[in-house]
Length: 356
Image (cartoon, rainbow, N blue to C red):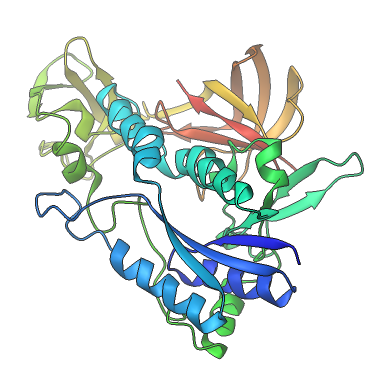
């Protein structure tokens, strides 16, 4: 009997993924990936819910009568997710830790570990459809429940990672997933979906960063070069941010937003939202990655500028093996360096790149 490992996060989606894999007749092992150590009361993640998540995953595994184990991925997660996240914010960019986790940890180190233990593949609770092509390669596509589409977070997966991945929820809606969980008495059946950065729980990113990046006060400067306020550190802000500036606009129905960072001068640049400074059509991408075949040098494709953003039509032109310029048909607001653009063609995920 072939063995498939299911990455069980303690949520309803991965719980039902485990159920569906078992119903297909595979030998199933559930694993909970521990990514953070916060037993120290001084930890910035005082409310990190990992203990409850781990026990919820364990209970579901017991209900399904499948093997279950906890795998310590703390060091790997720190190396490939937490350190780049802190470093990125410190350098003025806005990395996506969930994409890093999928690329290097969940479908990287964890998947390799489970295959070494005899599993043919690893299944997850992502809403994503996988298709095998006539040439033996695989594509990732939008799922049945397009409102829950999570292909964006898989934009940096490579073909070999996709080959050994399974997505049992491809043909289910979220409501169907919850009904299945309820009918099988899962502890996770009515559990709310996790929100925000994967390992932070209820902790704000600014509070997390304050434990690792020292305050570095500087001026807040408007378009005319006039100092309009002070900031505690550029890493506490991202492009397009309005809240936390504490600057009166002295203008009805208008407000300041972050439009840039000058790391050399340690200045935060702001402008009125009404000035439309945040909008642009042409952006550069670096760290290009493809899920199957490399993109053509020039092509018209689609893009999700950020997670949950609707598809946008773009013209893609590669400028080097690792970089490209993309031009949107419609102007886009506040795309920050370090964020990821996921690239598509008719619902098929092609890969992605980071704005820079």
